[in-house]
Image (cartoon, one colour):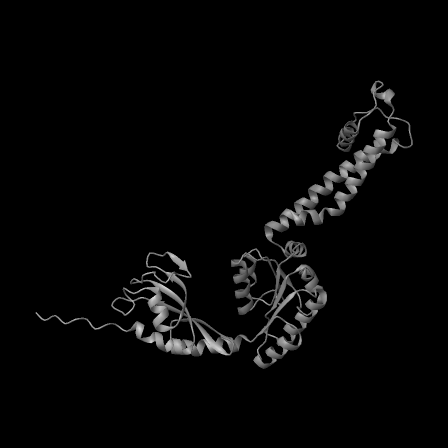
Length: 342
């Protein structure tokens, strides 16, 4: 709807102005003698104007310089309306069906409170997917029209614009002035930084997140340039790879307050310590934070109560530090079964 209003804005304004002027002239100057002595009402004037636009002649022609043009101009205007409207609307529908570059550009220019993602590489496409899962409106900018993920992103109803992310014109087309955030994740640190700074110039209130391969530079940029997030994907993934080698149950790893925090998935296996205990037993004895308890029947309980019993097949989402990983190791060990004395 925004695209249609934007594309037909000038046309609708011109039409509205012509209609209003015609109604006003008919209402003010059309002689009552032509209407059997009755004064024309505004409603009648509007009705007659509409009929005249669409080639009807409900009124007798009047030799009045203020009214004469209406009898000639309105039918021509009506013809232009029909021709222009049909052609323009047909073209828009055709572009929409093909999801053409022109259509995507028009969509992008009407968006507000969205996120602009610069770069559709392996990281960029994942960022777009996550944003769409959170029901966020997204506009993507990619320099390479044949990039492998362009079609995939287009399938997510995300307009993709092609251009240099460092070019202010490309950012303007992506409506960066009305965006709430920009995420720069190309494989070029300088391009990411330049795009971020240009976006900040166009929209001082925009939230900026950039990818940088140099972790030390990322920290300096974040601190000195007021950028909300400057991250090194290689540094973040290195931590996860190292922790995953220690435990295959680690889902993610990040640093907070100088401490590496791990998100761990723990499954309650048969004949292990946890069977028959509750959430409070695990929290109290192993000093970990339990965020979620998924029972074996698929029921998910966020922030589970201490009294929740643990059964075979249950899965727990746990947050803990390195020492906590060591404390959790015995939980996967099988208990010794009692021997059969017979």
